[in-house]
Length: 443
Image (cartoon, rainbow, N blue to C red; front, top):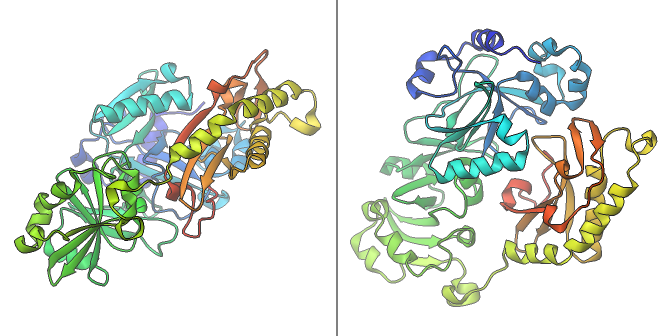
């Protein structure tokens, strides 16, 4: 439906890409002549400086896909005149279509025939690519790039209307979230001067990631983890570092540790004191002090290694215990679905109806939840949460189980028997869905 190479060349000209910068990255997101492609992402909010969500950044080669997610109503207006997708201005959209070039050097590739646009299948390929150490996923169609997914925010070079790009120094990274007035600038493997730049009241927030150190000001550890594209189950240690002059006098493991593999790990203290960056910026005598490393939960709960905390497994087990009820409710709504009843269904499918019913069932079982619009496709699912412990999971009955279509036009798949195994339950970082006031973010 969209013209590919011709439009890509035209857009590359319109946005005046800094070819020297992009060429040096040796990105694989290029057209058949080897020129970097301008890729697009549509979001319902204008003025975003980060196009990274939940450890991923999804982009399409076709601007029309961006229009669809920026303004579904405008997308439906333009559906029969697809050439207008490439000329409509952001000022005419409720949200915004963002243009970017992507620095993906070592991607995994998958043809859309293997995924059939099924997001869960795509996520399996993403998971596999990350396990293989790839830095992105490229989806192809007829041997041409269709979509691309980056695994790190620093791989995204946003292009605005003045043809400027978001760039950084060699060890600089950006931390961004809605509660920050402007992005916070952090540093990987910082110099003493850079540590001094990010300190607040003689404290520095940091991650140890393998042999590397990341420091930044102002933002929460969960926000920085999301911005860096590192997940809680990876080899990361979250710290607050306390400075004495220009040296690290002590460190404290933060509560973000309960999302990582290092939570209650007996090797944690030795790993910290032997890290080359800690050794570089701390005095030897301080490193030998038994109190050099402290634990966020020690004063509250007693010995850190004996502490027990609430986890996403607790929520998941609660939901699994009532999956038969959710399944029954889903089957009832599916059986009731009459496509000829335009007044009630309007050809729009039933995912939103199911989500509302699931929230009612969960509420009846004293489980907090809310329906949620998917940020990257026209679909509604639910998030189950525990505000006291700031843990959350998503619960979804994927649309492909019971309906087929797209946008606001869906048709019933006949003779479906819904099973508990059809539900997908996934853990999600609290800060990906809730703001600083613990209010659900509407993407």
